[in-house]
Every structure is written in structure tokens, then in C-alpha cells.
Amino acid sequence: MLTERISEALALAVQAHEKQVRKGTSIPYVAHPMGVASIALEFGADEDQAIAALLHDVLEDGGPQYRSAIKKGFGERVLAIVEGCTDGVPDASGEKGEWGERKRAYLDHLAQASDDVLLVSGSDKLHNARAIVSDLLKIGPDVFKRFTAGREGTLWYYRSLAEIFERRRAPMAAMLAAEVRQMEQLASINV
Image (tube, helix red, strand yellow):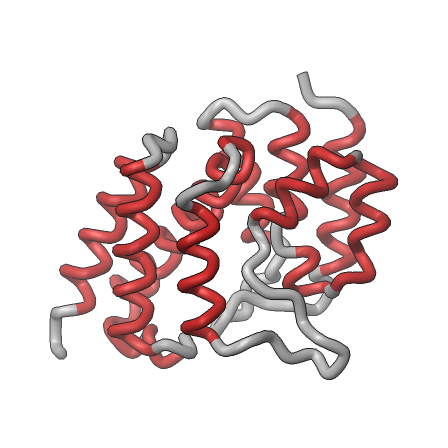
């Protein structure tokens, strides 16, 4: 059963992502954590996991000042899941570490992460992969210009993610692998 905590989490996500949009689009960013929470619920998330899905990018995109609000409002477990899904918190100047280093460290982390983190992170990556595939169908390989790592780095990262989620037998692993295969196929068109 979901309680009013879920609407409180959504309100915090809306606040943290206010005025943010999805990379290269005009889609309000909060649509992403809403989609991630929906996927997590489809794969059996309990309320804490669904709340963490709504808040999974709050530290990364909103900043470390949200740690106390997450802990106070939703508890240690939710905070631990959110921290486990975070691959880099901006420093005082708003910068994160180098992309490749952060992603390699995150992949290493996922190999050992808790089942809570795997469920939310896998739901996040599945939602992102679906968005990339959708954009590839709409605009083609130019979509990779939005990403720091470009085409090759983005494909490497999603292949690596799919392998880890399959190895860990995460509930959404097969769907993520299918999206990554489609992403690779579409990425090779007109290259």
C-alpha cells in the first residue's frame, strides 16, 4: 500500500528538479523520476523503494543539501537507496568528477550493491534506455550529441549496465538488455 509519503516524496522531487528539463528536450525533468518510480512499482517495489525512485536524482541534480530532508522525511533506508543510486554529487562549484571515472566506479558499485539499490537503479537505467531508443527513432544518431560520452561511450555504458543487471539477476534485466540491443541497432543506422 502506498501512503501520503509517496506524495510528499513527489513534492520533494518537484522542488529539487524545479526548472530542470531532460537533456536536449523541453520535458520537465520530474517526469523521469516519476517514470522510474512507475517502473520500480511494476517490478515489485515497496513504498520505500518507490520513494527512493522518485528521489534517486535529488542529490545528484539538486545537491547534497537534500540529504537531511530525505533522511528526516523518509528514513535511513530511503536515503541509503538514493545514495546508492547516485554516481556523483556536485561540489561547491556545481561540478561533478570526470564522466568515465564516475561511470566505472558506479559500475563497480552496482556489482556489489544491495537489492534495493539494484531495483531502483535498474528502473532508472531502463527508463533512460527507453528514452534514448525513443529519441533515436525520432531524430536518429544525433541524439548522442547530447551526451558527454557521445555515441561510443554511451553505448559502452549501457552495454556494461545491462551485463551487470543480468549477472545480478535484477528483475528488469531482460527488458534493459532488449532496450540496449535496440539502442545499438538504431545507433548503427546512418553512421
